[in-house]
Length: 425
Image (cartoon, rainbow, N blue to C red; front, top):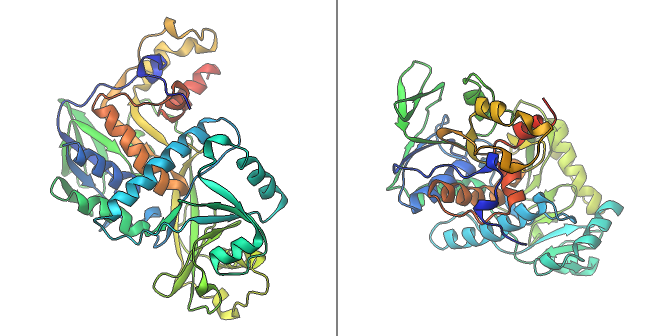
């Protein structure tokens, strides 16, 4: 894929001014915040990591098992471009970090079953894509059985370099790897943001100052909209909150023989501490509680691809090993990475986009000084967030992002506002 230089970016997507101070605050200690803190620390920044929970990885990044595999598309979309780059970077990043930190990283490969006609067609199209030919290969039902150790009912594709790990430990490994330059502030709920005399100041519910720095990065998923909503002009971000539930099956004689993760309508992992993990539901909901119907769904999806699988009736009712969390995704399924626009400036200077599309007619964007975002990774955070962190830190340092013009536009925090302006809204 062709990489275009920064000078080709549209005025409303220009790079932000590089950071002038080594001090940065990151809000949120999930995979987005932890990988951003790690990337900042590696480049010499002093990081204050602020988290409302008592420790890192307490929400969507806190599962005990997660997959790192490509998200493929058969078109030449920004989605396809981004997630191939993110996967190639993040799998190598995890391999490197695993040399010095333990987070159950296992590069066994992952099988995606062709469990219905639609999936068979998709896989056929994937196998015809030259630019991903090295990432996957077709495997027959017999090969699926040999690779996985279980008698799944169909063929599929094998992502040879894909891996699985513990997201909970992976997040903590990023923080531990740079503990000398990351100051973690847990049990700190950010109630308000103020920008005063060149500093972002974070206050708790009692109006006590939590931290201050010239640069602030919001990596706190959907909660970022609450903090941004304190400003007079609200930035549209088109976020959705989706609840996901992962279920565990303990000491099951048959499925405990599984050698690698297998995906179908859901997924199943090999045994971790005596348990196989099944996931994950995907429901628009704001309550992070485990539900009986979600556990039933996770088990039933597995039974559809493992004929004759015997599950004790009591297993359907046992929610004690399940875990539910809220994911933050965007309506276009791409994350939000980069500087936060000055909405008033955008509306004043780009309102004519509905009539005049020539970029040369517009001034370069203005942003809220020193304010950035890294959110919206959804269920793909293990692959997406570390690469997003790399891009964000490159921008803070004034480096060329090596992103195409189109991809910069489709990751930019101002993209939903620009789309509105082009429609005259």
